[in-house]
Length: 231
Image (cartoon, rainbow, N blue to C red; front, side, top):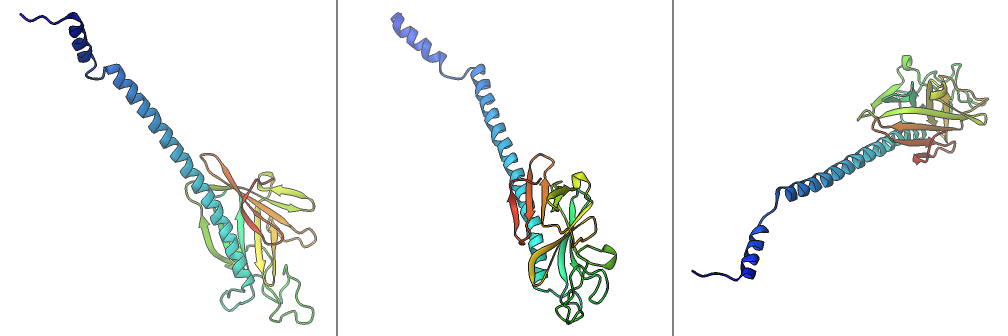
């Protein structure tokens, strides 16, 4: 009978022992794959949430820009052609806000936030409105609702050298644009105070999964959706 040398026998046995994977090796490979997948999926989910929050902040800023465009362009409201347009925020944290036409009170009535032209107080250059959203006067144009449980968690206004926020007691913020001035008329707590004007405002848009974006409105009319922070 043919006998193989011991070295050849050892080599054959060694080759047979490495023809497949052991159970431990398979478990290690599966564990590595699971960890990699978990990292990828978590990163993708976090990225999607960040993008959604950023897009929502830009949508809020864009709606304020719509109000500016409509107000400076004197978009008609029924038979009225000189009304301002604004955006109303209330009771933060909130999932909704309102685009409105500032048509009440009408030209010639008391309570206007715009000084009438002295030579023609009811003429074509006179402007209606009290720079505040009046739901009972049918001023609402569109109600916007934020998705993905994102909220406007806070809003702030700057007046008389200091900031005030909804988290500190503000109940509402109105930002109104009306021709020919690009500067917004801003009101808080349902009242416009010409003697103590609001010159800046800031909104905090937040996600329940964490993270916030900030929208600022300057006295010049500049609207920014990527402000570093609110007060």
